[in-house]
Amino acid sequence: MEKEKAILTGNEALARGAYEAGVKVASAYPGTPSTEILENISKYSGIYSQWSVNEKVAMEVASGASIAGARSLVAMKHVGLNVAADPFMTLAYTGVNAGLVVVSADDPGMHSSQNEQDNRYYSMMAKIPMFEPADSQECKDFLKEAFKISEQFDIPVMLRTTTRISHSRSVVNLEDEPEIIKNKPYIKDPKKYVMIPAYAQIRHKDLLERWQRLKDYSNKSPLNLIIYPEHCSDITELEEKNYSSIGIIASGTCFQFAMEAFPSVPILKLGMPSPLPEVIIRDFLKDKDIAVIIEELSPFIQDQVSSLNLEIEIIGKEFFPENGEFNPGVVEDLYRKFEDLNYFKKGYENIKKETNNGLISSLIGKYTPKTFFEDNNALKNIEEVKNIISSIPPRPPVLCAGCSHRAVFNTLKKLKLTVMGDIGCYTLAVLPPLNSMDTTLCMGAGIGQALGAQKADPSLTGKLVSVIGDSTFFHSGITSLIDNVFNKGTGLVLILDNRITAMTGHQTNPGIGRTLMDDATTAIMPENIAAAVGVKNIRVINPYDIKKLEKAVKEELARNELSVIVCRQDCVLLNKNKKTAGYLIDQQTCKKCGLCIKFGCPAIEFKAEKYSINNTMCNSCGVCSTICPSKSIKLEKNG
Image: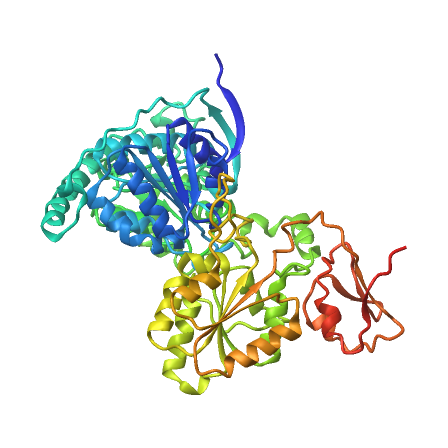
């Protein structure tokens, strides 16, 4: 019978793969582009799924499930693996009992991230094998294969996706039922799982042996395969057209671009790029003059291929950028350069004779790498596309109308305070018109940065605050707060508690009282944690009460002790169906001072020389009526 088909995103396909692979436990901390993996896994019965307070804890939960005998999955975005690196590195030593897969979702182009690090290097450093799917079908299939390899080689497996793979849709064949995977028995084995130095030394040697066996496997794996052009009946036709003298190596989304840009050139598709299948690569390139390595971000594959000392030219980052996300046009530009040299008519040896040099030397200086955000040849002659692009008005990211964070940062700006920030919706306060964020490094960093700044420059005392969201506080702010208490910090920490993990799409966190699987649980309040670790000055304030908030900030900054203010107000998007009276601006009394528009709420507009409120956007927080000096912003009267 024909299998059922579905059109799935990469993240949805990974969730389906987890179900079909018999996964029993899945954990994560939400972070784009990986968030939807756990959201979709939670819909499958038979899989326990949870949001953890951070990626390190999520990794530890999954490893514990694996040791206990259940197949487990942990997912995170690329920077999340930095948080989880401690257990990740040592898990390579201990190995697994049941299969364990770590999904790392990288973000080339930084669509929603503070950096675009290339997490493929984590695989090499930890000596953990890595799979890289190129579409949704492969997301499902590779994940299932990853569990088998994890158990076969007693090691976690890293499955790397990128934003394009995570969020793009393609057809996926579905299995009717998941594999029947019985939990493996737990066997007490301290020499395997307790990494004191004496045991870790043994396990490290064992890891090196497993890594060598994984290299052998990679050279035989069906995930690494050579794809010849469909229109070429045999290798002779390729040779006649000088296509066989070029070999392309690509993986993930770059494989899709290579297929489009170089339709007549053989491609080695690496579904398992780590450990690198050196034997396959040598065999693929043995009759080639040029190897073209197409990969986003760092030259992870290119550097390794170069180290093989093959007597051919290797083209890669000389012509492709090390930043940004690729698109077909980025890759097509290189193909055009081959055509400009008449390469496919003359061949490598003739080009070499004509230029008195190699191909790279003949191209360098004539070609500038393009990034995803720059114009490229693929678009230069498409006037329609250019006209559409030029007609789209800019839409910078902005806090939602009625967002409680806006009142907080309006207050901090008014008081001209230095603000050490964090990762969350509130990071947008760095943009005009609020301009109220001085630093944002990584999750949980703002509290520690504030302590360091104050220790370095005591004159900042009374002028410095740190801000952190409720979910980020649970993620990695608690330890920073403890450090402040221990080291006698005297600053002010604002915990912006909007009762949800808002930035990534309203996931629950320990302060909500509900789990990912919608079970009731204990709600852990940030103010109680602050009290438990020794903070003496704690307030809980509704940030919509902007006058009370300003007064509280001033009073706490005047203390010579550490203070915490929890700014608690539900995210305005949690209940969009709530019917409340809207606000309007009385045109008779409005002084047109512009203070309301400087507040930055997208519901407040300036058109036809007058200020007004768009009630299709207004969430009736009422803060604008508080800051209006002429009291011209009022509730609409019913009827």
